[in-house]
View 1 (tube, rainbow, N blue to C red):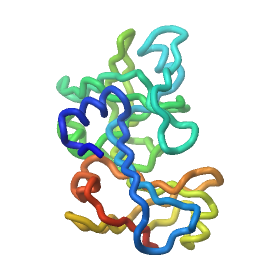
View 2: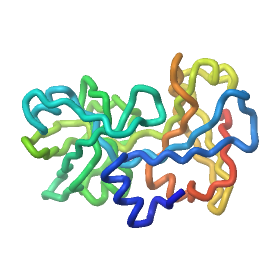
View 3: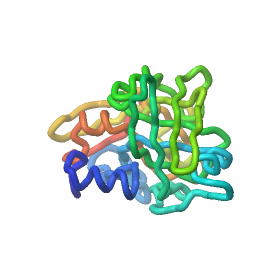
View 4: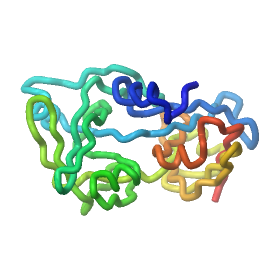
Length: 224
């Protein structure tokens, strides 16, 4: 699998999907026979409302699914937008993820916030009250977000059966142990359990690179 830092991979990130899935099977620790733990690096991306899609890309436009994500029903769209921060600092091509949502939200890594000049709060997705805003620029128009720019809280998606297996509930916290060239433990991993989700951890690019996730030899979910 190509590394997250090679020029070719960066091009793939921009043009195909702003979420790099690192499929790492648990080689130690408890796991249900039918479950596989996937640890995904969630690169910078944008969620949009239907109205903001039309403002940015044109009347009547809808998102164009380009690549399915690991969780069923979610996809990387063909569309990208420019994210503009204070003093016109910008990220020129940020992938839009679908489907659309009731609110627009921009999810960035810590270093992205430095580039834009935005002090990113760490929030669970959807918890955007009081967060910074930004300007989104598309080929047809501009949207000014008054709030919604966050650094997504690291979290683990799982089914209710997986939650029962690990002895946790939706809203609990777990830890992720990564062994490899940069072995580490990420604590305060928010549990997001529902009836349909697959077992998947989401880290941002800074976290994934710090742990050298590409060369991890094993990963394990632990109760806190």
